[in-house]
Image 1 (cartoon, rainbow, N blue to C red):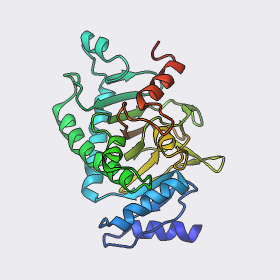
Image 2: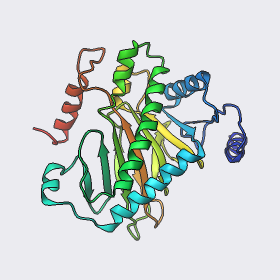
Image 3: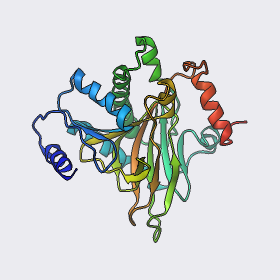
Image 4: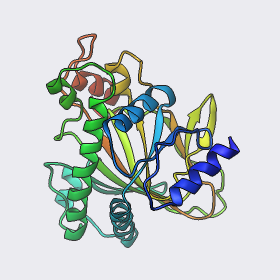
Length: 287
C-alpha cells in the first residue's frame, strides 16, 4: 500500500506524460491519471466506478487552476454576507442563490435559471466554462460505463438541463473538531464531481469504515449517485459520504451534480422524476 501511494504521489508531481496508474488511495477509490485521454483510459475510469464506487482523475493544470480560482471567488462572496432581494428570497428559498445557516453556506447555479443580481458576473462566466467541461466528462463516462444503452438514452442520463453546480463553504466552528457538519448520505443523481476541494473533512464509507478523502494536487474526485445505481440494477454502487470538522479551519468545495432527465424511465418502469419526488416527500420538501 505504501509503495503504491508513494508511486502515485511521485507521478502526480511530474509534468511529463505517464501511464495509467490504478491504486487504492487512503482506502478510498482509485487514482487514475492521464495527461492525454484515450478511449482505453475512459473505460478504466468507468470500470473503477463499478469496483470502487469512487475515482480520482487528474486534471489539466489550467482546468484545475480555473476551478480553484472560481472556488476562491465563491468563498469570498459567501463570506461577504451579500443579501438577496426579497423577491429572490421568495423565488429561490432552497434551490438557488445563497442560503446560509450556522452549519454551511451554499452558492448554487443551475442551467436555465436566473441568478440573483448580487452574484458577480465574473463568477457566472467562470461557472459556464467549468460546467461545460464537467458535463462533457460526465457524459463521456456514462458512454463507457458498460450499461449498454442506446446513444440517445445514454445522453439522457446526463441531461444538460438538469445539472447543478454548488459552491459550498463550511465556516470554522472553534472547539468543534470531530463534529459532524453534514450527515451521512448518498447523492440522488447520476454523478457528483468535485473539481476543487479546499480543507479536510470530506469522508467516504469504504469497507464499512469512514475514510478521509484527500485528492492529490490537480485532481478531481467523483462518484456515482443513486440514480445511476438504480439505472444499472445495482451494478454501479452509490457512495455514502459525510462531512466532519477535522481542524479549526473552514472547508470549501465545488460540486457538480450531473442528473438525468426526469422523464427517463428506470428498468422497473418508474421515471426519474417520480423517484426524486418520492425522496423529496420523504424529507418533507414537497407535499
